[in-house]
Image 1 (tube, helix red, strand yellow):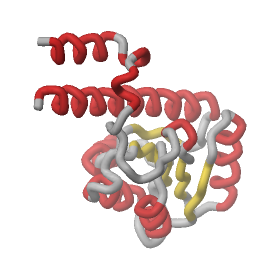
Image 2 (cartoon, one colour):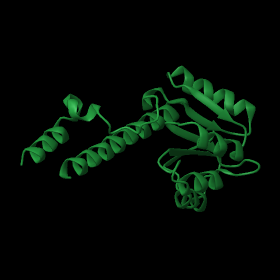
Image 3 (cartoon, one colour):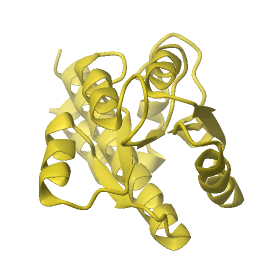
Image 4 (tube, one colour):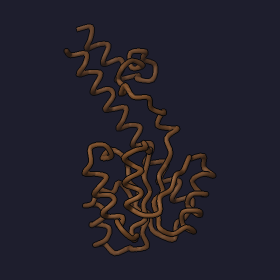
Amino acid sequence: TREYHEAMSVIQNPASSPMLEGPAQPASPQLPDTQLPLLLIDDSLSIRKFVGRMLESAGYIVETATDGEEGCRKALVQQYQLIITDLEMPKLNGFEVCQKLKADPATRKIMVLMVTALNESGDIERAVKAGTDDFVSKPVNKVELLKRVENMLRVKDVTDENERLRQYITQMER
C-alpha cells in the first residue's frame, strides 16, 4: 500500500522526511535533546567541578546535584540527555539512584553513567542489575569519559529515532 511505501522510505532515509516533523513529539514544549543538559550527581565539590569542567569544555551543558536524593528530584522536574552519578554518596548511593530512575516511567529512558572507584566484578554486576547503561572508573580520564558520553548519546539518539519511527508506522497502519 501507499502508506507502507511511505513508511519504508522514512525508515530508509528518516532525515529527509517531512512526515516526521509533525506530532510525533509530545505536546509540551521541549528543547531538542542536543540542548538538554547533563546531570552530574556527586557529593564531592571537587569532583563536580573537575568532571563538570571536562564536560563543559566539550560543549555540554552541565547541571549538578550534591547527593542522590537531590539528583532524583531534579530528574523528575527537568529533562536530561544523560545522568552521570557517583556510586558512593550519602542519602542515596549510585545503585539506589539508578534503580529509582529506571523504575519511574518519567525517568526510565534517561541513560545513566555510573562513576566509581570500585572495580570488583560484584560491584559491576550490581551496577548492571541496578540498570546503569555504562560505567567509568575513578580516577576519571577525560578522553574516556568524553568518548563514553558521546557514544551513549549516539545510542540514545538512535533509540529515540527508532521509537519515533515505530510510533509513525503504528499511526500509519491505523
